[in-house]
Image (cartoon, rainbow, N blue to C red; front, side, top):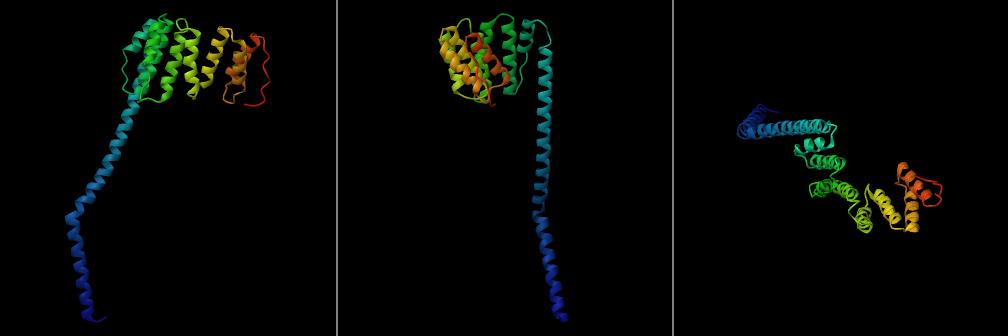
Length: 220
C-alpha cells in the first residue's frame, strides 16, 4: 500500500468514526432511554409482586384473626368487616362467613350469602363450591326433587365436585324411596377412578345400609 492509499484509508476511518460519534450524539439518548425503561419496568414489576404478596399476607392474617372467636356469630361479624381486594379472597371470606352463619343457626342468611359468590372475574370452581354449599344449607327448605336438580347441574358440569354431587343425588333418591337407582348410582361412584377412599367408603356403607353388597374394587 502506498503512502497515498494509507493516507486515504486513515481519512476514511476518521470520517467513519466522526459519523459514528455524530450518530451516537444524535440518537444515543434512545438507547439510554431504552435501558432505563427496561430497568424501570423490571423494578416496577418486582414492586408490584412485592405489594401483591404483602396484601395477600395481610389478608391471610386478617382472616385468621377474624376466625379466632369461639362464638360463630362473632366470627361472622368479624368476617363481614373484611373487604379484601382480590376476588378470590373475597369469595373465600364470604364462604367462611356463610359457614359461621350456618353454625350460628342462620342457614337462610348463609345460603343467601353463598348465592352471591361467583362471577366472570373468578374461576368457575368458586361458584360451584358456593352452589354446592347453598344446596346443603337449604336441605330443610328444598324438596328432594329440587335438590336433585341442583346437584344434577353440578354433576353434569364436571370438575372436582362431580362425584360429591352424585353422592348427594343418591341421598335424595334414598329419601324418596328410589332404592334401586340409589344403589346403582352408589356402585358407579365406587367404581369411578376419581373417587377418593373416603367417598368410596361412604358409598359402601350406604350400599350395605340399603341391603346391597358392595362389589370389590380392583382399580383406582
